[in-house]
Amino acid sequence: MEQILLSLFIIFVGAKLAGEIFERIGLPVIVGELLVGMGIGSYLPSLLRPREVFEVIAELGVVILLFTVGLETPINELLKVGKTAALVAILGIIFPFVLGFGLLFILGFSSIESIFLGVALVATSVGITARVLADLGYLQRKESQIILGAAVVDDILGLLILAIVSGSQTGNFTLLNMGILVVEVIAFVIAFIYFGSRLTRIHGTKLDRLKMNEAPLVVAIGATFGLAALAGFIGMAAIVGAFLAGVIFAEVNETYSLRKQVIPIYELFVPFFFVVIGAEIDLGILADPRLLALTAVVIIIAVLSKIVGCGLAVINLGRRTWLKVGVGMVPRGEVGVIIGLLGLSLGAITKDLYSVIILMSMITTLIAPFLIKFAFKEMTPMIPDDSA
Image (spheres, rainbow, N blue to C red):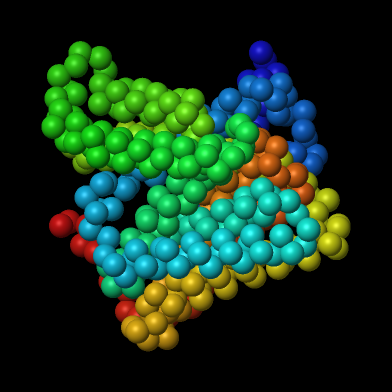
């Protein structure tokens, strides 16, 4: 027990120190946490033993992470997304998926490996994009609203695709089974978003009548674990259930300040998730010219497919808008990382391809602030009035 506590101490403090450093130099915190994981995996792997303990903690971290993302995605905001944002999201899915799938398929990888890379390239990190735009003072701009609206739709559709793909890996793959799974996934998502949000809207304001301490947060976390488990039982990724729980409780997020209350839990568990998955990255990829070349090509596709695909949806608004919207959709962040980990855990992809996906997610996340700053450079920042 003492050894586990010591490992928890070293990992947690290391992740937080790395996050503090990256925060101070204006770079995404998750990159620092992933780098800590890579260092531990390469030089101090004994810190992550027994493996089962840290895998459980990491799983809790990703569930809390997706719940928090869902809290920032109220159903009314999803319904208000305009046609332009929806078109940006759809083209931002088609281009990366087709190019990613096609690349690996042509190179002789299996169909499922090609699909997982395509799905990983589809992702856009809402949190990272929003944070960068807010820090630069561009969050109120029209282009930013299109980007954020599209990123939300992008994540919804990406998680839906992920649920279908992961479900196909849990049993015998046939067209009939795939059709049934698609219906199950769509029914699950629509039912819980519509009825769950409606139920929360009607009865959610009564949660503070319960006698337990922090009752609204307790009920929300309990629902998150329940929906995550239910999603897993019907063949979907557990993270889809956690995300839906966040969307449902987004209806009462402001009433009870749920996001503010969940931050301590988030800060405790989520860093372990990024450290553990970072530890799975095989740095030997950097010494293998073939894999290094593949990683470089995947990163180029990841950037260009979003700029071209998403940009085509706003081509009528001018080339500058094309560039702004395109680069705003580039960072894959935690979503790409989660997809890579799921593929590895299902045995759908090799550790080499997993490392390629994680490095792609890291690099696109790292370069996004610079790309966004360049694309918006001629615009005057609009800093919202905090007193409003």
